[in-house]
Structure formats: structure tokens, C-alpha cells
Length: 239
Image 1 (cartoon, rainbow, N blue to C red):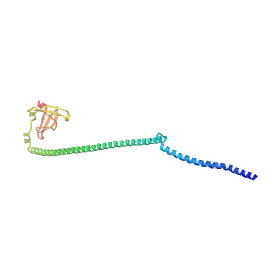
Image 2: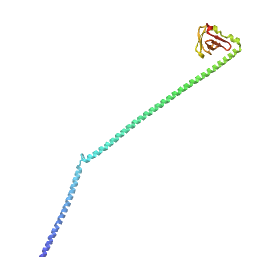
Image 3: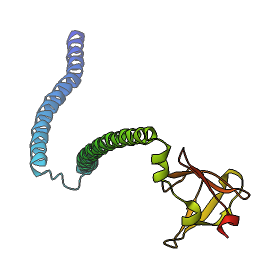
């Protein structure tokens, strides 16, 4: 009897010990079944949520829009800067073309001025050449005349005093001394041709009818000479 009671006690104890274990096993099995169902439900809900998700108005969409606007603003700013640089380059190009045209015009103007100056120089050189030729011709003519006068003077000198007297002038009978003006070596005399009534102002070295004015003074009047004959015309004699 005691042995049966002991065995019964062991059995009851074993049952009592197995109940919690079995309960935990049942709970684990139940949890496994519940977990699988929840996973399936969650996947279904996730698929539906993804399918039904509307990003419009969401925080993510707002952030995305802001980033896009920022990028667009940067791009617009860069485009505006590029447009400004292009405008500057276009203006510089126009300015460069204008400067090239101006330089080209200046070069043409300077070329024309140089050609005009060269033409003037050539004209002036031709004029000077003509004047040179004219002066040379005049010099030759004067030299010829001087040689002729010298030859004539030599012939007259060799003719003797009689020939000189034949061509002489009587100043007392042909001229009248009107006045003597000036001072020192700057004295000038005015004589009147009695035949024509014309007055003539003379100074030292002046030639009158082949006679040279040798001297002029207030006291002696005017002295004429031709190298051979000397005559004096003064106011006292003229009166």
C-alpha cells in the first residue's frame, strides 16, 4: 500500500511537472502559428500600403520638391550667368569689330594723307626745279649782259676823252636840285628834270643818265661822275 501511494505520488508529481512543459509547448506552437499569420497579414498590409501609397503632400515629397527647386534655381542662376557672359562676349566682339573698322579707316586715311603729302612734295620739287632752271637761265643772261657791258665800257674807255664828252650830260642845264633831306650817310636829294618837269629822288650810288651819284651834301649839293667827267648840282646854282 505504501508502495502504491508512493508510485501514485510520483505519477502525480510527474504529471504536475509535465503540465507546465506541455503548456509551454502548446504556447510555443500557438505562438508559431500566430507569428506566421501575423507575418502573412503584415505582408498583405505592406503590399496594399505600397500599392495605395500616394507621395503627394508627404514630407518626403516636400523634401524632394525643395531639393528639385534648389537644383533648378542653381541651374537657372548658372544659365543667367552664362547668358550674361555671352552678352559680354557679344559686346566685346562688337567693340573689337568697331576698333578694327576704326583702325582700318585710320590706316586708309593715313595712307591717303601720305599720298597727298607725297604728291605735294613732288609738285613742290617740280616747282623748285623750274625755278632753278629759270634762275640758271637768268644768271646766264645776266652774265652775258655783264660781259657785254664790260666790253662796251672797255670800248668807251679806249675811245678817249673826246668820245666821253660827246655823250656827256649838262646837269646845270637839264636838272634843278629841289632839296636835300636826311642826315649823315642817309642823305637823299630830289632833282627836277627841266624838260619833263618830273621829280626824281636819288641817293649815293644811283645812276642818272649814265652818271653815278658820287656824293650828296647840304653844302656841296649833288656830285655826279661817269669816271671821266664830274659835275656838281647844288641849290645855289639851280636858283
